[in-house]
Image 1: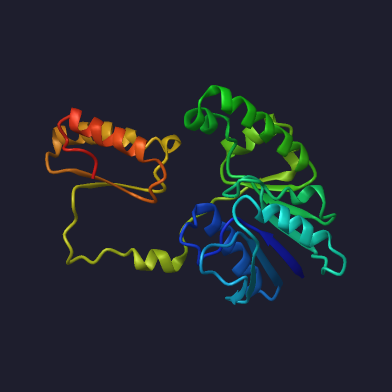
Image 2 (image 1 turned 90 degrees about the vertical axis):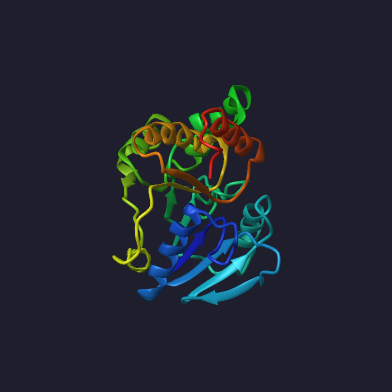
Length: 255
């Protein structure tokens, strides 16, 4: 089977995120079972336009704003091989979504992790969020005939309220690979720390500031507890606010 995977970033991209890892795991597992997989994504400085990795043909097209339009032009060009199925992120790391369901003419499977209204409000404020939410509802209409994969029952119900058909939505439960679990095994000889750890890109809508408040409560019973927030820095203003709140609470700032 010929599979076209449309994602934001490939595993070599230094800015890859959780959704990108999900898309890559799907691609490499399909390739391992014998399918012919083409993985289209955005490029990054120093990256080759094409390469093969784990049996997957990677094609990098433009940046986060141009990858989707270029993918469309490439697909509709005469002579381009037609896939049997398309797997895409409905709304992910790209600034312009692929919306492949609108033009590919073959069965489409779309990963849609959650609805974004509250995220938009928290990150951008109510006015911008209103417009972005309207665009998200338009996107739902485009994907009305696609098969949707989402990672919780709550997200499934929210997608149904946006007009997506419940019979076309399936819930899957993502988790770490066996290799990652083995790498994370904790040697008995290494002492544990009283550490609260938060991992992920640092943006306001992630609400990492709650970790600062939680640390204050933990410190009441475990004075040596520490908080470490580790991830890509995308909002230095928000980061500064968290550090300031930590100092206000006498915690010495976030770790």
